[in-house]
Image 1 (tube, rainbow, N blue to C red):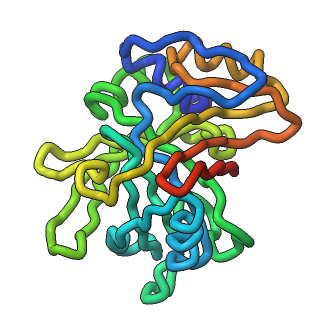
Image 2 (cartoon, rainbow, N blue to C red):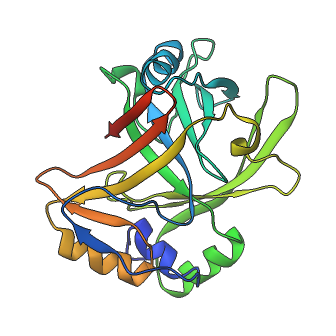
Length: 236
């Protein structure tokens, strides 16, 4: 199979997306964005960093058994949230899709996720278009209150070094993290920057992803979160 980025993924979902815009500034939020991931080498430090700038303290979410990570969550509005992820000191092996979080010198964006309506249908469409992917794969995490969250994820084999999202379908019996994570913040904007925005825009059009692309010498993700204390700008 030829490897195609996660943007070509979304083209197969059949959802109604707005064609992307190439703009000089960060603006807007993709309609199906589920969550953004802030990576750090220490969870407590990551939580404190976000609280210092937004005024809202993320709540401990739980650990990812076998992956070597744990997280804290903060709601960004309806069906959107921030995941702060870091190594779990109680696990000896780190198998994070976001690379070696221990080496991050400071908190930074390491990825993002969108929610397809049906991961199996998405997988079938990707096969029909010869897009290389992995999944859907079952995942779970036990919350501090003992409740088990379950989901399925689907990953593109070529994600443009993290510029493209992975896909997450939440189980119907699981509470979406945006519902009961600490509130008070909202995601103001999300965008992707690249030195080849025209080529990237073609992928977005094929995928029908309504995300903003900005021109930059560096490939990166950008997000802005507004809270009671102020606005926090994040990048990868």
